[in-house]
Length: 511
Image 1 (tube, rainbow, N blue to C red):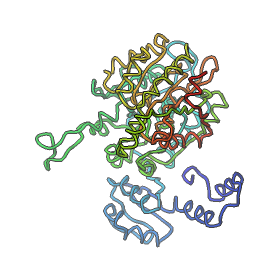
Image 2 (tube, rainbow, N blue to C red; image 1 turned 120 degrees about the vertical axis):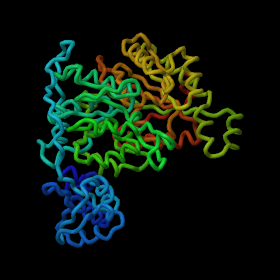
Image 3 (cartoon, helix red, strand yellow; image 1 turned 90 degrees about the vertical axis):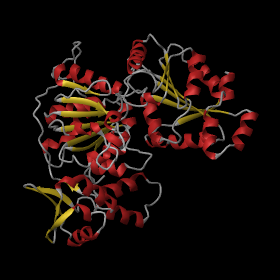
Image 4 (cartoon, helix red, strand yellow; image 1 turned 90 degrees about the horizontal axis):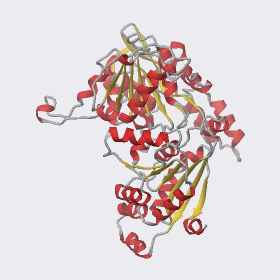
C-alpha cells in the first residue's frame, strides 16, 4: 500500500468506513508504524556507487550491525549513508525486507539496447486495436514516465483481462530490447503471435528460446522451465561439482532494457536468485494474484518490485471486460467401502482417496450433459482420474506428457469449436488463451492452493461474444480433506467478491 502511494491515514479511514466495529487502537498504531517503514531507507546511485541512505541515523546503525545485511555492505560514508556492493543490489533489498525495513529503490536502470516499437491501430487481420483504459493505466503506472520510481513492479489483473496487452503497451513505452519469461512453450508462442499481430515489430526480430529452439533476438520469449534446466556434478558441474543452470546466460546474452515475468507468482526459486543479480534491468511482473503458497511474496516485492497497479475482478466484470462467473461447489459422498479405506489411511493419503472417488465421474457426466453445446474444460490433478474421465466422456486428454505440437493442435481445435470438451491437467492452469471456454469442471487440485483456484476460474473469464455467463464447478467430497482444502482454495476468490453456491450431488443427479 505504501509503495502504491497510500499513507497510514488513508488506510485507517478505509478500515473505519467498511468495518462494522471500531478499529482497535493497537491495530491503528501498528498500521502507522509499519506504513512509515517503507521509504525510510532508500537505494540511490551516485556515479558508479550504490548507496543506502536514511535520515534516521539509528536505522543506519541497525543495518550496519545486522548479520543479514552485513555481507552486502562495503563501508560507511557518513552517519546517514552506507556504500553497498553494486553487484548485490537485489540481495541487500531481500535482507532489508526480512528485517522489516523494505527499501525504496531509486538507483535507476541500465538503458538497454534501443528498440523502436509502436502498437498497431489495426491487427494483421484488419481488426481495430486499441488497449483498454486500464491497460494503458497499468503500463503508465509501471513506467512512471521513465522516472527512477518506475521501471520495476507488478501489475495485478484478473485472468482474461489482457495482461499480455499491458506487456505490449509497456514495451511501447520503454522502447528497449525485451526478454519475456513465461510458464510454458504454448504461452511463448501466444506471446510471439500477439507481438507480431499488434506491434510493428517484424517477425525476424522476435526470437523463441525454448527446449525446441534457441533463437535470441531484440525481443526474446522464453520459459521458466528452460531457465531452470540444470546439470549436476561431474563434467557438467562447476569446479566444485555443484549444479549450475546453463541457460541463465540468457539474462546476460543481450543488452536487455526490460524483462517481463509473465505469471510472476510462479517464479521458481532459481530464477529469484538470478533476478537478485540483475536489478539494474527494468522488471515487470504480470499476474492475476500475488498469492504464493510457499510464502515468498516478499521476494517478489523486493526482487521484481512492489505492486504498481491492481483492479478488483468484480469491477472489470461490471464493466464487461471479463465474463460474469457463477461458482458452484458440488458435494459428493464416499461409499461405505471408501469411508473405511479413508478412515484407515495415513493423513497424506486421505486427500487423494477423497479427490479420486468415482462418485465425481457421475456428477461430471451430468454437468457435461447439462451444458451440451458449451465449451467445457474438465480440470484435475491426478492422471488416472483424468484418463477415466476422458474415456467416459469421449474427450481428448491433455497432460504434461502431451507433446507441445499436439497440445497446440488440441487448443486450436477447441478454439474453433471442433472439440466441445477437453480434459486437462494442471498444464492448462496458466497462460492459455481459450476465449470461448465458458464452463470449467474441477475434480481435483493441488491441495488448498488459492492461486490455482483463481487461475482455473480464469480459464473461462474471457468476455463472451454473446454476453453469456461463465460457469465454474468444483466437485468436492463431503466431510473429507478434499472439502477442507476446497474451503481454503476459495479464499482468494471470496475476497474478490465471488460466492460459491453449495449443492448436494444426490439432489443434482435427481433433477
